[in-house]
Length: 217
Image 1 (spheres, rainbow, N blue to C red):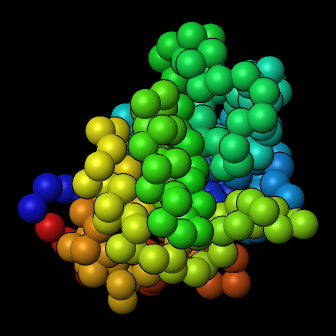
Image 2: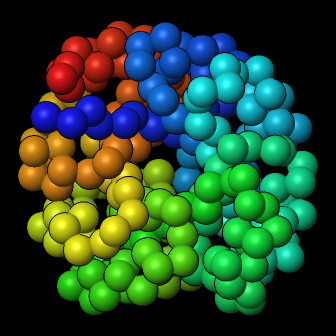
């Protein structure tokens, strides 16, 4: 079985980053300003964590900006290896971002709502480096852009993985109890966890260790 990459999201300190890396995370999610959800930290702290971690670790800026110009401004403050766009672009294109930042990976989040998400994923995949499938609902009055702790319909996620040509991360309610099932059923490039390895919002070493033990490959 191919190795599944693990991204630990909502990292809120250099200490949490080091703890996640110690147990096997190859990517860290650093949450910028959001309308809702956990783990929001300042841009200066995102920049500090991105600078401190080893170079082989991917650092994802989670941005809720939807205009390319604003995403570029946000990124300029943090210098992560990767930009994770958690909402749909409203102005500009993914290609413009790639042209401006040729060494930075562009990840688009897709919130799985129904079967129409499959076609949406196919279209998005032509223009980004990675797709991240999450639970949430960007159509609510207060947008739900991840960090819900809910599992979505993995049958839809599986079809997306089978049909797109870019790596896919699977997020949404994943923990030590369902991670192996998620890997076997969806076969994603990677898993993305936030609440599944936390207690009262803090990264929990016991849960982290148990999670990596559960998915040993």
